[in-house]
Length: 464
Image (cartoon, rainbow, N blue to C red):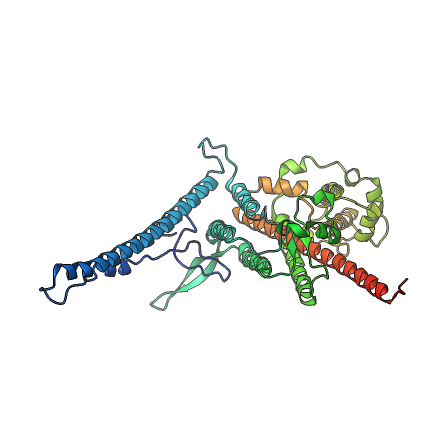
């Protein structure tokens, strides 16, 4: 821990992680300039026989110089005091938030707060909503929000430095002898996933920073082009509150179009990686007993006759064909199907566990199911869930995921799950924003082409 705070993460030592960020910028204040001004020798006359008028002429510029120097010193001093007070306020605010986390978001002291894991998960989710909740444009993050995100995420992620596991090792002593000791090392899941998530965050913020100079804008930035933007882009009614992108009449340049496409592909890959990490963390969380108590008696009752008939008949199962058959038109319907399929999957897994010992269900496929119908159905249900989440990348959390997060008590898993979840959401938003720009660009180029064709036709048509 640091010397002055008593909280993990509030220390002045540098981080060893490659992608870590400094928590606070400690300003060093030097008063050498003020001391030089304060102890500077006053202008003196060349002889003591100078007249009274001459001495007054010399003293006037001296007083003027001293007065201006004093004003500059006071201005610098006031600036230093303001910066120092601002840093003190930020430090006190961080300590208060950290204390709230330790108390489970219950500041009354009655002991009715949630567990620490849930409190930290809520803190990361609320921080993301505060920083990125009002950001709906392809532009760099404002400096104050960027500073808030870096500062508070450093505080929350610093907890992972104290989540370690013991492993036996041999320690060499100065006299040449060796002893078996238990050494500490970061927990394997944190060591593998946390640096990867930090790298993904850096890449996402870098994508936003790359749009500081762009050829497009948004409707409320240029009111005179609002009506023209309606012609090139029309947003759906369910997202009426989002700003509408605008592009030049002739569309974007080829360079900007290629850059947007590259950034979209990059953000899409980041989204897939964050979603994969989040799914792996959720799969490692323990299933709450309250969820198991609500499962249906059979998987067929859970998914319904139509889906069960498709999943249970035939040697070849295609989740894409099943989703095409269901013809889901909204995310609400997709979430309902996901809840039903997931519940049926755990019913089939529970029945299969009575005859098979499975250490990790993710490794079970139809090829190694040994002809067990319950194992086959559970494997097909899992593939259907993965395909469903890929087709609806913005799908909300299922009932099981929400239950796992609510009853989870592992702080490391809570940090990794919430961190990957917010990065997954940010990557999905960036892809959606770029798609809006590309759609507006395509419509503008089509309109420009039609206008050019009309102009050419008007020029070559005979005058009447």
